[in-house]
Image 1 (cartoon, rainbow, N blue to C red):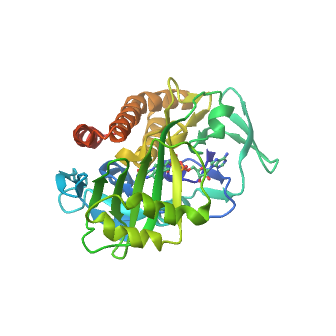
Image 2 (cartoon, rainbow, N blue to C red; image 1 turned 120 degrees about the vertical axis):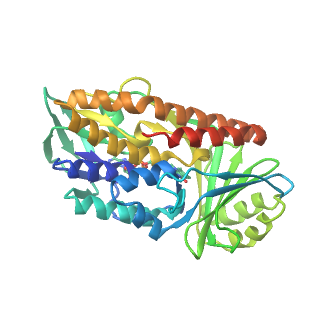
Length: 365
Ligand SMILES: Cc1cc2nc3c(=O)[nH]c(=O)nc-3n(C[C@H](O)[C@H](O)[C@H](O)COP(=O)(O)OP(=O)(O)OC[C@H]3O[C@@H](n4cnc5c(N)ncnc54)[C@H](O)[C@@H]3O)c2cc1C
């Protein structure tokens, strides 16, 4: 039983079903479609997707790229980071992809592998037995499951039902995203240092890109949706150089999202009895390393692999946590350190940390 049909849940469902498990996924969202603008899938994400035979589908749906250009507060390019090409020299290092497109690819793979995905359902209660867990769903039906995988995101209910404690913290940053037509110069990621905030542009396809902005030192509040495009355009106005071109595109954008940056990582075990949490439910980095989805996909693969290698579910889950904990903690803590440096306008110290962390993440999962 996998709870949550997001990146982690669909990747885990595919990997487990291919390893011979009978998999049912329950997703609280009644609709199959997902919203959200775009995301960057870094080398480790592409490498994990390649193991599920899905990297080429994502590259076909998105925009492949290999370079991040850092631009300073005067609008001058200062640094060019060539990202490691983990799928070989002929494939790009990373891909920018619209979230609904990634979701479609993952969803189709989960269903092809035989997983059953049911919508509008959640878990109401878990009762651990000796070698299985009784799951009561929100429609009052019950299942006796050998394993429950909580892939239900940052505010995971499964984490609480398993008695695993973590409280994702807010660090004074809000992230903005707006979908805009892709300017012809946007062939890779551009990141623009500002005097207060940080902005950037990520290509998603031949015709689309998303603008992002990290707003520093703000309270965790909710703004009226109708005001978002205008507010984001205003935050971009002080940036020099190419960001000026983006301001009218953002002002004309009909849909803009603004989300708080919340991070956490579980200390100690990620499992209890026959239940385990993966993806954002176990660890959520700040978006500065663009690696939350990479960790989520890797979790699904490693979980299936470790369960396959061990005689009992308990031993497989213990091996899974021990293989994932250090890598995920390092990524979360480094992403938070980068966010802090960004907030303090110490971009020159943040860039080497970004490079070092990408090198570390290039190591096998
Ligand atoms: C603004 C923003 C930008 C980001 N940009 C990037 C990026 O560029 N690159 C990158 O790699 N990462 C990025 N991330 C992080 C990335 O989105 C997450 O790390 C990733 O989506 C985690 O996947 P997940 O499946 O664990 O969680 P989610 O994607 O949150 O999926 C959880 C799923 O569980 C469902 N669910 C929730 N509660 C329940 C319940 N009780 N019962 C059943 N179902 C439930 C939800 O509806 C959802 O479908 C970004 C995050 C944010 C907020």
